[in-house]
Amino acid sequence: TINGIGGDLRVAGSLLAQGKGPGDHGGTIAVDSTGTVTVARHALIDASGQAGGGVVAIGTDARRAATGPSDTTAPRAKAVTIEKDAAIHADATRSGNGGTVTLLSSSQTDQGGAISARGAGSGHGGTAEISSDGVISLSGTENVGAPSGHDGTVTLDPATLIVGTGPSGSTTAATGTHSGTITVGGTSTSPTVSYVDPTSLSSITGTLVLEAASLLSIASSPTLSASLAALTLDSHGNV
Image 1: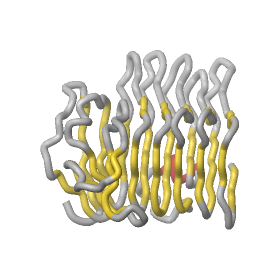
Image 2: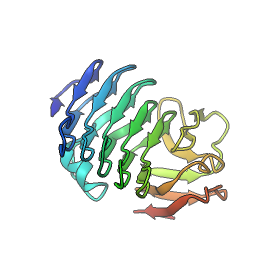
Image 3: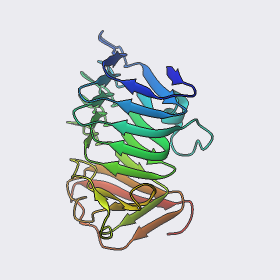
Image 4: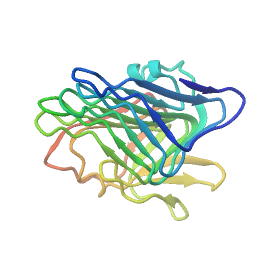
């Protein structure tokens, strides 16, 4: 665990907690700060294991990653940025289930890298969660697939999430392989709403969870893949 109290953290190299032996699971990596957490371009965070993936928590602690959004008291970095060409892995490499990757912030989470929590053998895919008490933006990929087991779960969880085209002037992110396009609406200095392009969800397999703390709105009917196992819509406020 790496904690930054009163400052920012930037991961520019490699953080490894790999299980390389037969029967070994990936370990736990947590990078948290009261300021911002950045995983720089070409950086590698890897908690993969031969018998199952481990846990990676960016912007929060490992307990929050394992517990999920129901843990509302966990620490949060002000902002989390995963830069393009950064990689975060929590894969099963020989057999077993994929692990857990969680990105969490209090203001804004930007996911532009490659996240994977893949299953192996007969194991199932893991979970990838991109969350913020504010807004999220995505231009990277999330791979929670499994060759023989069930694909895993991708969770998108900002404060306000709208399935529909963002207003003029929104900042638009590129389409991610598993996440779809997220645009951020509001002023350039104070974004308030995360929009999901309804046409960009068609490639997602496994389970997609669209969750929001304040408002979840389906303004346009999404196009979904026939391989999507489940779609969950959950708001702690209005739907």
